[in-house]
Amino acid sequence: MLLLAPPLVFLSKVFRPVIWLLNELANLSLRAVGVKPKNEATSAFTFDEVAGIVEQSTREGILADDAGTLANTFEFTSKRVGEVAVPVGAIRALATDCTPHDLQRAVAEYGFSRYVIADASGPVGYVHIKDVLDVPDDAFDSPLPSTSIRSLTSLYEGTELEDALASLRRTSRHLARVVSKTGDTIGVLFLEDVIEVLVGEVHDATARR
Image (cartoon, rainbow, N blue to C red; front, side, top):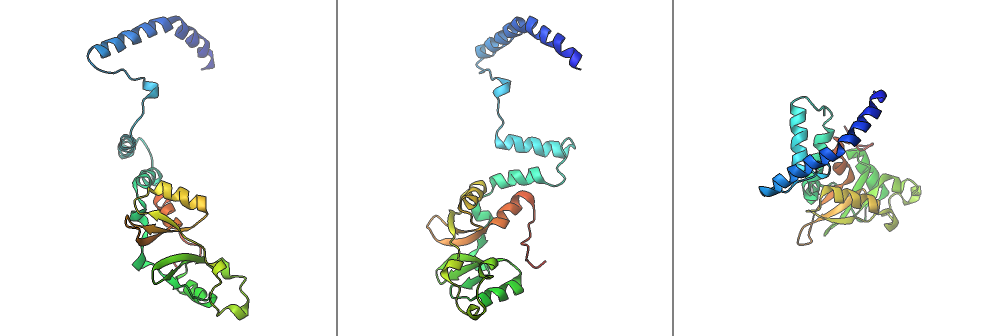
């Protein structure tokens, strides 16, 4: 194949003026009928067009997406925070005065490693089981120190999931408070749920199966 490269390069240089002339004549013809010429090399597809091409190619067997990665990517791009967030009423939360012992019982019962801390107004933070591993035995039944409760970043329910993921990564948070247009807390977004939309089901390492 490499032997054909020099002759092809030579031919392209010889016929370049002819190709340019034909291209310009074609562009002039298009402009004459009111069509704006478009350079194929710089043309772009819309998101819906790309999604349609992938869907049709997969259906016809031209493109393999057995794991659903491509389909998940398009779904991820189109989803909003409010569609993925867990509603406040469905969250297994601990009280602000919970103890390391309470956290231990919650882990034993539900198997999750992170728990929302909430008061009467709603979620105020969250705690990870590893935050209490160094708590002395004599303080195991005392309320969690404030330093063990991690703050929640806030995200508007209409935020695109891509932007939400970037925000969680930027703030090094695994959970975020989700607010409505009026500023009311309507749920909590978990990093695991965001990732699941993109790559499929993700299990908390300590979660019950």
